[in-house]
Length: 173
Ligand code: 5GP
Image (cartoon, rainbow, N blue to C red):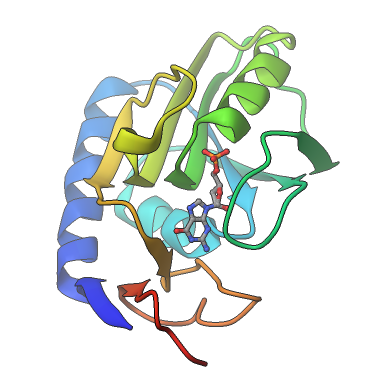
């Protein structure tokens, strides 16, 4: 395992993103939707940098396939608790990879007529994109490779790391 992003790098970037969101949503009260489970650490740090009125809700998806590749078939396993019609919505993701999860979520949420819908992701593997999806706020564009830490797991482990690490191909638990 090798450290890709240090705690300090992550925290600095989150402050920058928070400043951008604060400027863009001046006078508004956005709903930040964390996509479980991977985004919960990012979301919790992000909202504590956002000195503005906001709400938080969560959704969860699962995609059929093995642990390290996405099959592209996305299933909703937890829906929102609140209605989003007329609201400013920000989807908060851990990683955008092929873009298939995000495309599914965007289509689902747009059917509910939000006033606006933006996407904020900690990590973007933009080189691996299979479908075009708009990303409005991005922490870091990263190389291909399987990452863990800072909320992101491998077989439910490593979420509590304060940094993001990349698992090497010969990785042995
Ligand atoms: P997409 O639908 O864009 O291909 O996949 C996005 C989701 O796949 C992410 O939200 C995340 O759950 C998972 N994912 C993609 N890359 C990685 C990775 O490197 N590590 C882990 N743990 N999950 C990943």
